Image 1: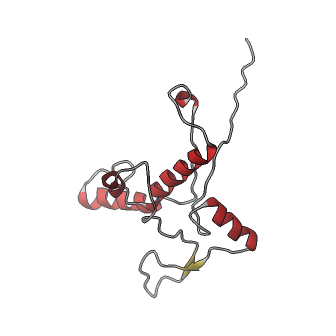
Image 2: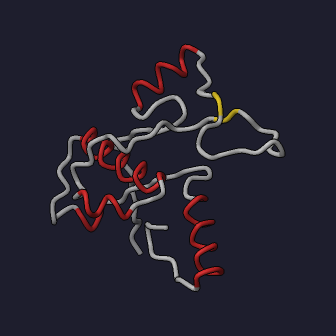
Image 3: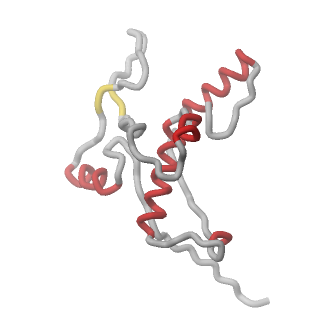
Length: 140
């Protein structure tokens, strides 16, 4: 049996995080020592909620998504799906390659997030329990 070597090549990358919605900006802020931590603003808090600060990602709803029609984009209610598509698109663009039918079967994209999408999972669970509605992929 011959030896088979599989190779992985990282051709592009990007970031959306509490330090910024573009990798170069976030990297510069990290090098300066910025934390990205600030007042928690994403949801209303009552007096029983002790946490008042967080590392929130600024809204990217106003950014351009050249790969999605507005009607498609409207279905993506959780920010993580928008972040994933935007960073993936930028990483492919940064790589400088064109994904053609010849290389598509050997092309993969890896995306990771710490807790991104938790809002979508909780909302899907709520709808299933209270409204008996099954969740749909990539939407709440």
